[in-house]
Length: 307
Image (cartoon, rainbow, N blue to C red; front, side, top):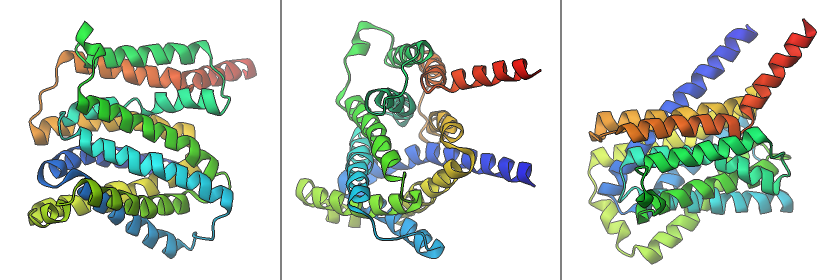
């Protein structure tokens, strides 16, 4: 039964990564048919309400301490407001496939920040991983001198990716004493209000633009908010508690893969050989940079010694 439960959890997380890959396509559709900032505020609000319903149903919400509020709010500023805002703005000018590949750098950026702020070890394998991942980005950008200069849209995606990586540091500190589902709920609800205030200032006609969208676009908005963002993050956080953060994080590598596949299928985007090779380098870099390869090798050595 235990093995069946583990297989079910793996399958569920794999399914969520496919949904997140599809969500990049959803976002591309949404930013092309709705005001980006106003849409993002409402999408995150939908996710927050979804998370709140789940948390109230499971009775896992309680009053936060000052320390928990501090780390949760910092996680919200970077992981909700900055990440989702830059993501929406960036998708206005670059293909969804490119966005998916840039977002593949989140684990490696998190590993770098872990070394800087959490005192994690900087090993030769991790350095190798960082170099491989950066080379992968270089290939995605065209493998030329021009690859070192980013377009505004690509710059936005890099800021989105980096903001999410920073948020993981604060989320890790917040969840040391607070349930991850409660952290997610507070982050999305408070973050959506912050995004809405920004949208009202920066997009004065945003609400009018939202009213002009079709029923089909609104269906995509609710699918993205409820399923991909709200339920998706709840399931992913639950998997972290069951199988551990390191094992769950490896599944993140499937997100850009599905993002690229769905971009080709639904948006008719064209993928070149440099992007494919670049993606391989990024995934390899992530496996080395996050310490996954080291952990596997250590387990093998211990097993050999025991035998």
